[in-house]
Length: 85
Length: 85
Image (cartoon, each protein chain N blue to C red):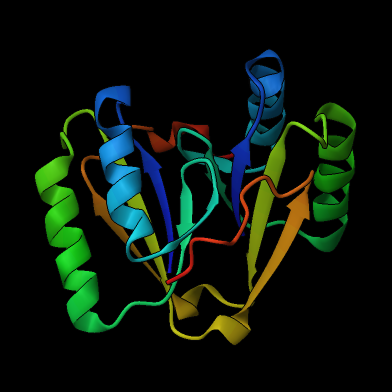
């Protein structure tokens, strides 16, 4: 899955810290990773608690299989992949 | 394709304005859309000109087929889809 968030500054650190427990941070406001169904539910339930739905938005793109996806960078990746669990 | 950018404030309006000619803006820093091969080349060539590669990053996820993708929102979508060409 690819998760992109647009979160108010007051909550962004909390969201980012929470997501780093489950996913890989690949860019400012973008996480990637694989989750089991139960972990996915845990993550989305918790995010619903943290965010202000009128102010914040999170889009989650769920891919059936990574092999259908190509990924290209323009500019240098800025986030080191050291936070994979 | 899904395009997510992390661009310095000095350049972000230029990048956003340029991308709106080709793709749909779905969230702060996220665009979606379909491009022909030649349009894709035009877009990526132009983005390389606009951005500062040491400071900015753009990730482009290219999907072979939309049917392999599911999309979920947490919080309300904030961008109206009025800018589709």
